[in-house]
Image (tube, rainbow, N blue to C red; front, side, top):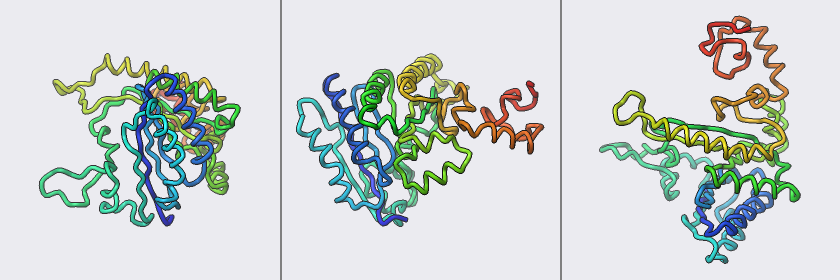
Length: 311
């Protein structure tokens, strides 16, 4: 375990279109120059209403070192109060790595966890606040795409910024920078290249995710049925937002476990050039399709229930 693991959070609202552009530009510049390294991961979210949400984690830095990293960024925001509002003030928390998952430690991070509110619940019954919305959730849409680190080059950042601005006008898009391995330790990146995962992950600085849903919703329970009309509208908005993002990516690429149920070209998106090798293994060891799942290796040959061979 690293000596320390920590959390950095904030939310900033831009007060005009021009200010939003400046904030997105500054965020991408700051990430490329200060956070694109093995110390930092998690999320930068660009939301409708011109809001940037920062939910980052770090390791092997003290709280003071993490504050020093972020200080120029937050000083820049505070220096332009006429353009930006701190919706949620910056908070940076760090703890010994070996204790970071202890309930007593997590409770010290403001707003990070929620306690079990049932009478007599043990003190250790906690869960991450960000997971609360997933209880009873029905997803309306969920799409993802790898963003290559080449977009962080000075000459390419403008295209990324334009895509993020255009997408955020349609729906929330979030850069999960811990899910792209570019910028990580070389030995880790090399090891991943030896797996069956889409090689695009090794060149990606982030997996961008856009999703929508409602909660709680339970089909067949009167008064709690999913809102189909709203689901269709939100799904269309997510697709439109992600189309803006995919417009700056050189190839199809998506993470197999966090992706669109209707992902087109899923063989290429999930496994890239590894798919033919995986398909050959599947054909050799499971020619009758005993093991089947939606958009799994070889599933294009079978009906959706896995019982009827299509070709």
